[in-house]
Length: 248
Image 1 (tube, helix red, strand yellow):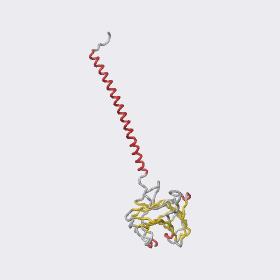
Image 2 (tube, one colour):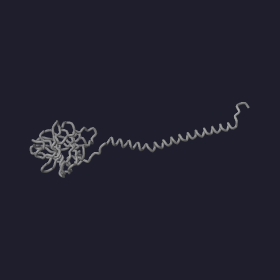
Image 3 (spheres, one colour):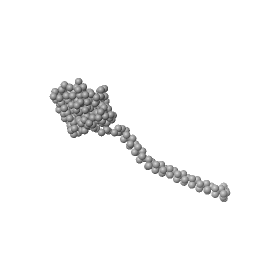
Image 4 (tube, helix red, strand yellow):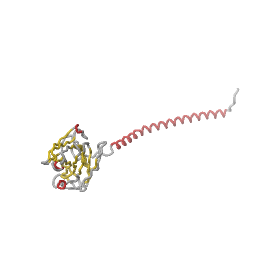
């Protein structure tokens, strides 16, 4: 027979080598399959975890601070002027009401409106306020509000004691304009007071005023309206004053 003669022992070795190669290839395929399977299982196990981490991170970025509880009631005037009080001196005349879409409320459907026909002779001759509530000594509070006016004018926002000696804890003059602006005062309460008052005084000038989203809460200022640019105001150097000194 023509051709190369291969000894039997070599033919056996060749067959064994082929079988070994075949087995090796099968093992490689099997291992690759297992790797792929394990990788797939790993992805299935970890994908929900990655999603949860991403969602948590997004939530933290979207809501970096918890919105504090408002001590004041009806601060957005959804219930019109329920919970709020007003007072005018004999030398002043003003109408207190709420208005809707016309004045573009900051939150909700209403804003407080103070129509002034006689301004009186002092800022305190026209007052808008809420009382009573408790403030605790040594606690930090923030008093904030949104306000605008018919034309530029000055008003005073303040936290005080309701009743003799009418101690004022955190008064501050603020300048209003035709555009809504947010103002806030952060202060440390010097005493315990179970009969506190938060308000705005706006006499002297015959210029109408609008108020909305009035808040009083524990802690430093916290923004709760996207895009807001609050105007921080500091209480007077002498934090605690009296009604008599405020008049002067």
